[in-house]
Length: 160
Image (tube, rainbow, N blue to C red; front, top):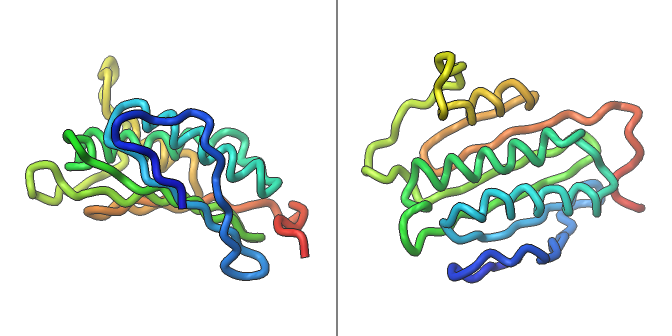
């Protein structure tokens, strides 16, 4: 597990990959509730995928930053002293990106939907982007995830 101090986001941290099964790797990091953590989530995801020999064409990294951004904007994780956890799992079947946050900022668990915002809106595209780019996704209070299938022709991800 990688822990980052709540004071600053370290841009050059390396993911620690922990094999859970012969064909699965999982990397986890805990990030502080600051805006720079969305970029750190994107970079962490990219490094995990690179270490696993997988490319999701940038979509996975973008979705990781959107999930992180939602945790920062809409939950207690984005308040002073807040944190959230990012987990990236890679298997022969695909990639799963999951964010666990501190729950709704106002105590209510909002119903979230992935719909396109009105033209000209400056915000509100995060869930829509995740829905459009990933193969599966779910948003529940305290937890959001998305998954990307890998082509059947993809090489084995984990050396045997």
